[in-house]
Length: 151
Image 1 (cartoon, rainbow, N blue to C red):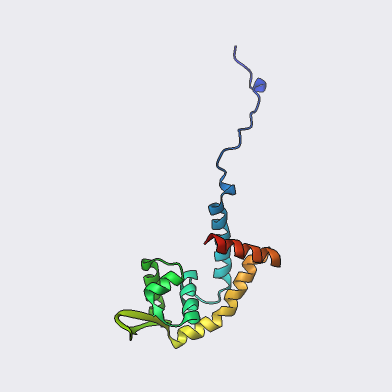
Image 2 (cartoon, rainbow, N blue to C red):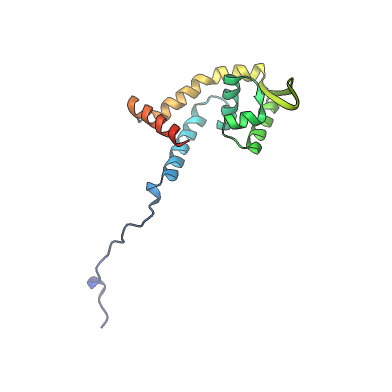
């Protein structure tokens, strides 16, 4: 009547239709966590990735509206406002009235912000190199092309 435990066969469950480790979002999050760890260790100053994005984009483009800077750095309105508020409080950015449209404020780097951007840029390049280090040159190029295609 009662079957013994030894008589029961162990049945391996069928592969589920959704396996987290095979999902692009999960893999991208793990890669982002690795990159963030490298960034925090190697950036060489107390600055977040979003603050660095704003500083480096301003160094690249020059003054622009906060709204435009948010679009250029893929940050929503609230995030870019907070980033600029913190950078301004640190004396790294400043705002001024747009001479072409008095209703709009332009964000620009201060001298200290420009100097920091120049000082940190080599570290940021090294962070990218370390993040991509497991890949050979062809794989790095392919990865960047594929990621750009997914944007």
